[in-house]
Image 1 (cartoon, helix red, strand yellow):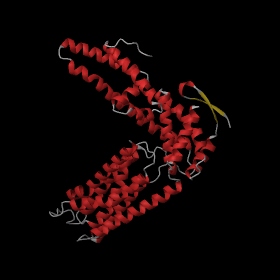
Image 2 (image 1 turned 90 degrees about the vertical axis):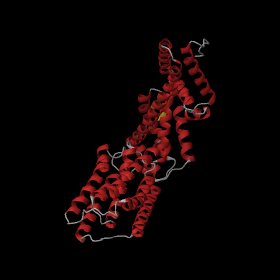
Image 3 (image 1 turned 135 degrees about the horizontal axis):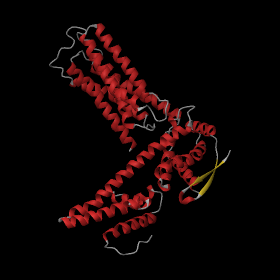
Image 4 (image 1 turned 60 degrees about the vertical axis):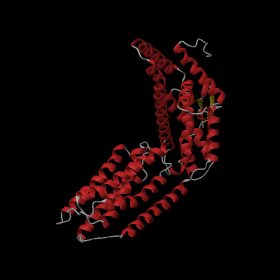
Length: 212
Length: 204
């Protein structure tokens, strides 16, 4: 009685290790998301919060609006439930992983270049402080997303994890952009884009490790 | 309600009460909401389908059953993620496909590792051209014999080569330690025959 034995073995295993129901998953996801927002916002405020530091208000508003829009798109594409049981398509995930950093980088540089003196090199602001803040602020949403997705089945775990990392990094970008006045390309690449790559790598590794 | 035939290990046939797809979808929805009893309906509906799906790709009943069992456990773990109103079968196939891919990758890794282990002594002792030629012949015979081993024996040998304990290997393949020892013994006997050093009769 193989089918019966197999079913009985699985039912015994299921009874021995209960899994969260849909309501519990929903509740824990909201809790994780709320905790991530509190942690990220807390780290941002501890670091000093919004700092215009000589930036025109219009530039600050424009970069913040662009960052918020891209972050919203990234979160929607990477963190919401896809229609297919296999998860997002490879093309959609690649678009997030490659397109979001490119859009944020290009948008920041183009907007900064539209105001005089906003892309100059600051010798005392290489980008390491922005890197640290972005990693700190971006880690919380990534951990929350990975935790909420720990049992979710996806066909492309590494790419999905990378997309989660980039979406977390995009949220961090918004806050770091409000904090950092530097629009120099080298600074933006090191302090703002590199954290997205690092968070993407962390997300990919975590998802692959979770699967193995 | 209809009856379906499910062909299990060793060709035995088991009749399972048929369940309609809509009933199974509703049962999974109830299970996602916490109705523990509904999982039996889900498991009985998807097991024959997943088994047929996996066996077509593995051509090995014992491993196919392991994959289906792991897929069912993954479905249990992920039940909270089953969307309201979603279809059960595409979701179950998606989970089984993931487990199947992992299984195929693991099998590939074990095979490559075992081939390296088998080939190493040949390279170490082959000093002259003649010895190298002979070593290559033995290595080819070993590879051919290893490839021709029954999957259960090959898996037992591969697990032993990768350092898996007999008890763990037996648990993984859902068999007894004695059966694992027997599979391993038979695999080693067949491989030894390639060296021509062991003329004892293969117990199989």
